[in-house]
Length: 167
Image 1 (cartoon, rainbow, N blue to C red):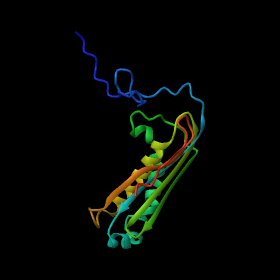
Image 2: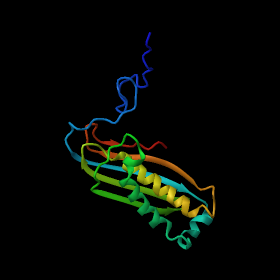
Image 3: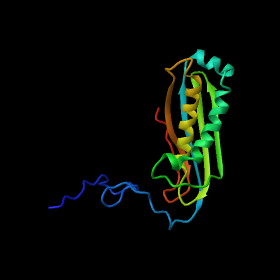
Image 4: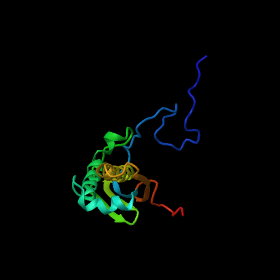
């Protein structure tokens, strides 16, 4: 008797699984290109001493290096996330702003393609945050990366999404 593999997606709503529950890349060949945008954020929480040292970092300006790292990461998302489609990016922004308890990161990614850019925005925010950690870890290994999430997205079959504040 052959056992049917346990289905990992009983609701049938996760698109990255086939009918047998195996991971797969979604076939987007029948979809029409549309304008798509995604915004993601991350927070890097650090001590006041580390925040004060940011302008004097011997490796360079951590915020500028993080901005460049985020842009580069967004462009390579499909190499990092196995089932992600490589897509052309038409706009990519990473903003990093010093705040009283650390650094706030915000990314914006735009494309005209057959699939969305949520993963590119999230990868950019994550890598920018990791870059700030890397550049400041000599001062404090207890720096925390928090609250990486999608803020909003537009375009595509699933329509628009706006994150609600959880607090």
